[in-house]
Image 1 (cartoon, rainbow, N blue to C red):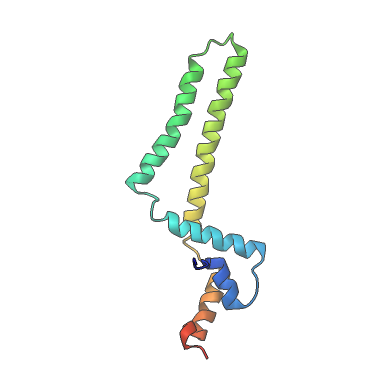
Image 2 (cartoon, rainbow, N blue to C red; image 1 turned 90 degrees about the vertical axis):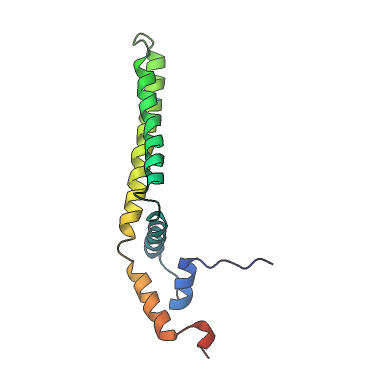
Length: 127
């Protein structure tokens, strides 16, 4: 039988003895994602991912430029593709950057939970 994986949110709720509100939960999840993404952010692999994602938008713009302006429906359709590719790129980069920046400052609930865990000691030593 597989063990149930305890998430950071679940562990903090267990330590503090109370459920987190939505704001606390979101802050912890963003911090946790940011910590994981720090391993990738700024590496050669990250550069490849960003360049590949950017290339989709650039290719869509090149395709748009090849369409005769008289073909208004084709122009609009390809413009929509280029616009969407750009929006995805911008939102992706912003989401990753935001998570990485959030990882620099642990949420208050994380600090509170860590202090409580420290005071309580390891679970196997508790009576």
